[in-house]
Length: 405
Image 1 (cartoon, one colour):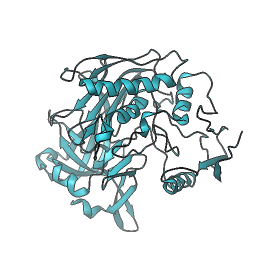
Image 2 (cartoon, one colour):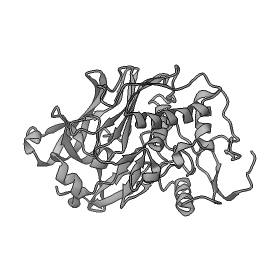
Image 3 (cartoon, helix red, strand yellow):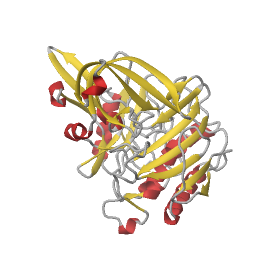
Image 4 (spheres, one colour):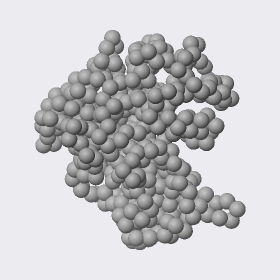
């Protein structure tokens, strides 16, 4: 393995670690999500927005050069009526209506991936950008506190291709955080190209095109190499990587997303009902053409619209899941594990179904220890906007009484 001279810190850990920083999305069978046939994207955008989108598409096509895959697009118009989820039409659109079923408060954008559970082949993908809770721009020279559309779409297209968030490479398009007005995510870095190599080339490239280096090696005792020189926020990056090495935090997961931090008071103000209960059953089913998962909670306490809890049971619907050989990933969706004791802040969707408010932000796990009862919200692996700055999500622990139940 070649060691680059600009690597300043070597942390040796006795746990399995990947030598690279990129991550790929996987099905429950362990199959990496990928495209077998080149997808065509339907752009439901205004003309200047389409210019930003086609530039983002071209960026990934440069990285895909030499593979059998290339993204293409057609224009549907800003006011086109589009559908999401499993319809074999890959759309990029805005969400700006209160009743949009694909909007989630505090989530910058959602990427939907329909795939074959056994092989990981992606069959449909949709990107929905949140124009109701966030401001956007296509002209960074006029930017004040908006989000650069081209940068955001370049990042989301990485998810569409099967990449999850990157760890430790701040310059990477797939790095977990991005500031308002930032345009650095318009250009692929070596780590992004290495992710494409892993998914769409037979051999992984270990030396990047920009002169950087990627570590190799098999799982087991691994060396985690952290580049310090010239890195913005280098202290935070080093601290995060060392923490992962020591097992203090988890690396970003496949469902990592960009979230505006929702405080407990905000959740309580917007929730139709707040439920403290235990997950006793989960079942994947179809809702129209899309896969959803219904979770049954045995209710211990209930606040808000108590009529929804009158039978002592509450059904919570989540987007995504796996049913036979069909799966659907939806970034930022809450995952309610069988047998877990939880508190969830729930909203009613346009059809009256209860859903976790704010995605992962509306779920708190109950932990009992030494006679105390704590509520834990785990935002690790997500990037969170608080006080007009992005940072890594954390594991938040509060007394269970702070949730108002």
